Image 1 (cartoon, rainbow, N blue to C red):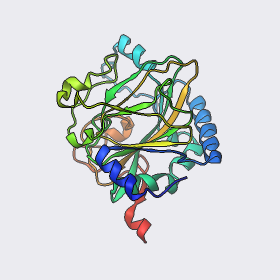
Image 2: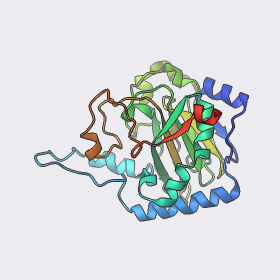
Image 3: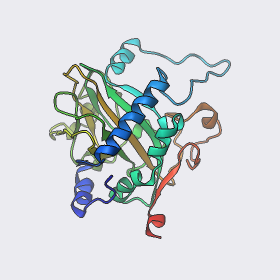
Image 4: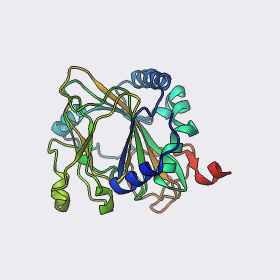
Length: 279
């Protein structure tokens, strides 16, 4: 596993908001990740989150848009926080080596895991509309970073990611949902509509890293095979709760007030510290 970005990679990430790293994992590591992810996803079954939804007495059932959910289900199968429900995934995702590259690339003082997610684009799956990550989450930060590990070759044919270079510098939190309108985000940010998105195919074992505010999406899967990826989103240490539930379990969510620090090591473990690495 690669743990040290080059000066050119650091400059490129700062300017573009994303980075492609070929052969991030060794062949042996790739097989370990594939085996672990496949097992954890199979064990999770149809449950997307690491916890079952809790409905409190008197709560109204959540509103559901059946058509939107049907579309989203064909964008990718998504299983979140596998580290919380599978011992092998916990080992892999809390391995300090994994977060080293992201921490050094982003230049942040310390990182906590926000969430991991397996993203499996099904055969002939729908494209992923352009969106930003951080506005979905329970904190705000211009320095959040995600690592996206390709478990299969991600190609132009099967739905590789596209990034709008430099868009993280807009530093805004307006967003759209992932729906059938691929370019809805550009109605929110018309000033970015003329900037060409960059396709980022990457071989299995490679990684993409991107800032949580960079515009990104993915093409449709035009093949009869699934396209597997495993991601981990990192939150800079010191972020506070903004009122959004996102992936936080209901029992923990009920203890939080807007402005509280998100420093619960059981939910968001500290996995990188520049101070510790320098010691």
